[in-house]
Image 1: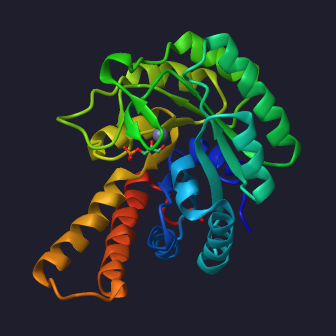
Image 2 (image 1 turned 135 degrees about the horizontal axis):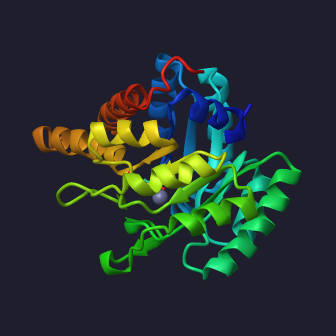
Image 3 (image 1 turned 90 degrees about the vertical axis):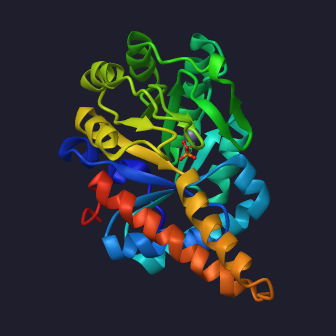
Length: 283
Ligand code: G3H
Ligand code: ZN
């Protein structure tokens, strides 16, 4: 069965590893990610953006995730990624999601706290875990688009107060990463992670995990990051394989012949991240 993130995140923070959120875009992602987790014996989180949900349909998302959880035999959370309203959060919970993110980062600080508290109250009442966000993460992910000038780092004192008031189970704070591929290397503000992680029980969430150097990932986990989101790197790996194959064989028409290798590429990418995050063998 699908489980809330609270089934594994407290242990991750205590033992110094992170659990990956891997975004689900279609069947090949569902299967590639689950196969990686089964081989690595790692818990994981399926992230589903509102755009991905429109693409697949909410009932397909839940049904596929439930089958993947059963097949893989590892703890799996089905998590709404960057939920934009109380309504969409409720829709997901009713459909069978075990976890939700409410992204109130575009609201004022006080309004973000107020709305996140409402989500926490409703979600916790039915055993669903909640991620909140403070500060704005740059880059583009589906409906979430933030120009570089508008990306704002989280203020550590505000982040601590946000957690104390909302008691979210995972706390996304903007520390310098961005959604999508980086031009150059991201500058991660480790001092923000350090300051906040010491003062709150919940693990910190690193969004925009694609393209962050391994050493920076390891350092951030050491300081208190317990959940890391990866989407773009899996997409790039999948699409690259398919583009090469179709380029070499223009007469290829059976989708299984190129989607299968695409799925394998997703699996390999995810396995590498699970090892890097230290979640392998923690199922
Ligand atoms: O919410 C999902 C992510 O933060 C993924 O970011 O596409 O840069 O890996 P990414
Ligand atoms: Zn994100």
